Length: 382
Ligand SMILES: Cc1ncc(COP(=O)(O)O)c(C=O)c1O
Image 1 (cartoon, rainbow, N blue to C red):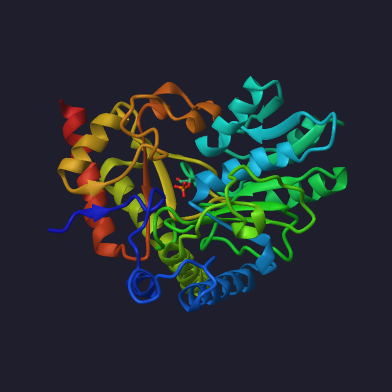
Image 2 (cartoon, rainbow, N blue to C red):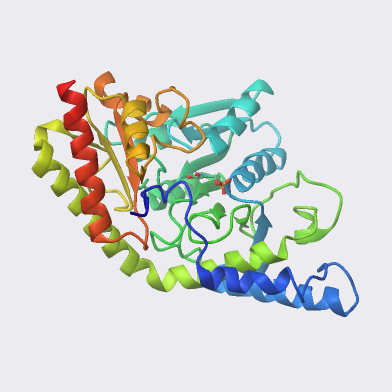
């Protein structure tokens, strides 16, 4: 039997349509978009087309999109770019304790340079309180950075309310929307967001491709020098093939958003129901807010069984799941997200993330859930 992949929050397979859109830029159309001859012009025309299409789909201007190498670079560019362009005397950043490391580590670096960072706490379901954001705002606050959807537990943060608050105080607002793209409506014409990070490989696009939306009103200084690409905001020859794939992935995923949501909801309920039936509802703990969440990410604890033991056994049984963010899986460290949620130790030490994709079938979920339950029962009787 084929292994069952339940780790779509880590990455997704490249869709054949995406791959097909990328191929010509590795073969016939290999020009450098900065070259002035016909090969370069063809690549430039294509690049403009991809940027226009993505801007239309996201509700922004083409000139407000900067192509990057992915979510990590976009987050770094947003944080350092805004802080470098800050007004004099502003040296404070507000973020949350449950951000991806691609936000937390740049913030820690800022602290080492003498900036001040407030890491907002979350409640036991992983939600940030808007009141806490308001209370943290100071006259010297230069940036608020908050994720839209948490990659470990799937909770949806109150981005609109925080954005309105940021606008009221004139503070730039950055949103890491890497896990929200294709899952939640993202209309940049409506959302009160100034800067937004996106990544291609979570939506059936290629790895190493991303974008940063920078509203035309936002001052953001560059960090990569050496060329005038991307309106001098990010030097370096554009990865045209990857951008072609990203643009196609966005074009494909947005009309499928509701279908994908419904499919993931069904799989989520099936997984929970099957586990509860076999193990009893007392034997599992579902982490994260059950209302304010995307259905694609299901984080479950099996108290008494360690995360590593379960993941290892699942891998042997051909089920791929994760302990949280891909960067920390493999290490024994407890997830900073679950720790911030202040869950009991037997819950934080036994959490596993299952994340669903369009390619997962109901049969796969039933099989995976039975395998999980059988492993848990076997380990418990040991
Ligand atoms: C919320 C979030 N932000 C940022 C990233 C980093 O994105 P990339 O892998 O494209 O660098 C990820 C990837 O897991 C993520 O889940």
